[in-house]
Image 1 (cartoon, rainbow, N blue to C red):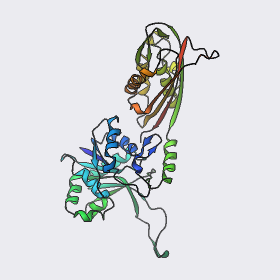
Image 2: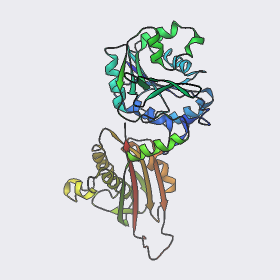
Image 3: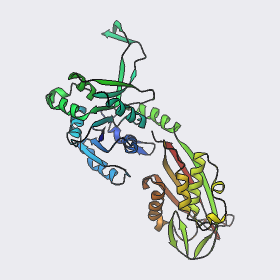
Image 4: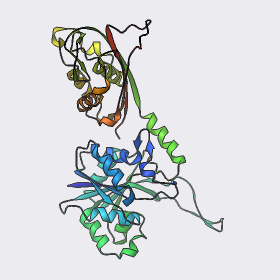
Length: 380
């Protein structure tokens, strides 16, 4: 069993507040790391470590978080070392490897977890790091004393992975007051003579310490995003119900269509195809007998399977144009239906509805339409 520990226990004094919950591109910073640990096939459960004053807020966040594995919330300590210890002392004795990561490094990738887990099979622990490339100087009162040989010097990062039994033994065999001298778990393990392997990280893994760092991270995340737009319209005929996002609304109308006429789902499907650069919905599902009266949700799910493993849906923004029936009473049910079909949290789905307000130049009295924008991001 492998356990992930995400450390978010800091107060953010240099940042000017709790940086781990600062919203970055519509998502709290800590959730970027949580998403990667949640997506990893090598992690069985996740421990989140937060300061006491944030526990209630994070508990509320987790109540709507769609996790495939257990996520346990822990209270942090006065130091990073104490925060980690508070988590690992709760871990099951069957735990083999614990992978520890700082929540304020949101550019973590799944491959980091994999590489560290492999390294831990032959070593007591492993750290992600990159070699020092700049010339190092030792100074005294801002006057250079000498130049340090940078060969074999590495800058340690997180995540870091360790044999849990050995790490726990290290914590148990050192006085509480002495733990603060160790700035990471690797240095504690080194103190007791354990073998720690360096895993060369060749990707950016910026740690957020100041507010200026947010702009750097935003740029990196933005460059990983892809967007697609989908638009669909159908005529309205006399009927008994409309299907909107897979949700059935009883009314006196029906969509005149080859499938079930779910305009919203058609638009989302086309937007997803656009983001994937895979053409349009008509190319994949032509008006043939095979697709007659088929559920549009079923068609959407076929396209979802085409999303690469290293890519996930980050945002779905939907605008519906429909004079009647009113969409507002059904928004919650539509979101639930769509989130289940897409396999995403409801909080990344935005649904807006409008009418033509009697504008004659935009006659939608006998039809309805929808525009959807889907954003995909790298799943790390």
